[in-house]
Length: 407
Image (cartoon, rainbow, N blue to C red; front, side, top):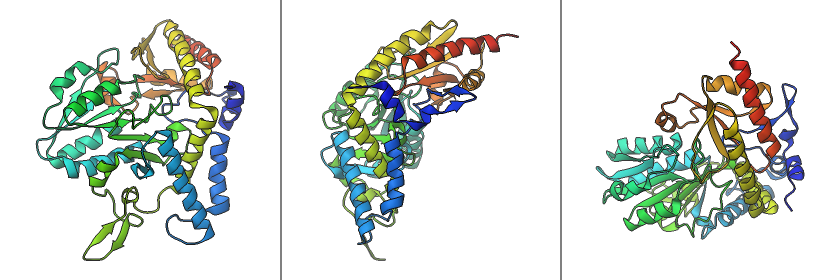
């Protein structure tokens, strides 16, 4: 059974006090906290079998390599990829998209071809494609969203043309929390022979993700947003597509043989894993996913839905608040402003109350600019948060408003 009090004891940092107040951590869209078993797994690797993978024949190396490849298997099963050759370890979502922007661009994009990105994307799913378009003399097109935060998918029929090679879309957006209609987008794209990249950084921890059933061509996510360490992430790609892409980086482990006349590359997925990878992070990611499987993803989804329904009813009731992103289909994110109060001031006062939130542009300038704003306050929650913490957030916003409007 899902026992929130027991689950909270799995996350040591939640026992901290900030400025004498019990920590209320509501910045989960930026990074999630780590369960004790993930922290222990990192310690175990360094204390018991730390050794470079895929190289030595020692007992340590064999153990570490086995743990690394087992983590790849756990990721494969977690997202229901067809086989482990489709799972590439990267340093995070940003690295995965940059890898793809280079390799996909080299193979599939020519002068005058088009890439479609969404207006509500994180910078990591915009800038790499801008760079690729500049390099290949391609055209970047934008699918806008409406004031609720929903993509204007009715424009896709006109936006996708015979020159479109790829559409890039978030599973869930990092500022507005909108869950995008991926089934519709994939269907429309594939009808016109367009590939689809899904940025799962804000989605995989909250939503059921099945890359095979959903027919995603590419899918990326970061470990640190799903209870694993920083510096590790995943690029999933359909095997037949990854086979066609050239390597992004050269070095050790991504080659079968090297001579000055000819280099032969490793088979998938090692072709894209040059150098010494973050094998400790990969093993810890496998442990984090195992922990979620132990808790039960259906239990997590059910609890989070209940918490999100409560929060999205409670937070908008705070006097003077404006919520940005009011789509009917959202993950646990509420971005807001209080009229006449700067977002950074609100964030600082909340911090003094022990409430951690995010302020600013959230690495999504086009989204913030859509509303003609300079920044927002963002609260984001996950399955170790509680309704009581949402209540404390609302009380904190009201107290901060009184303090900041005194003069």
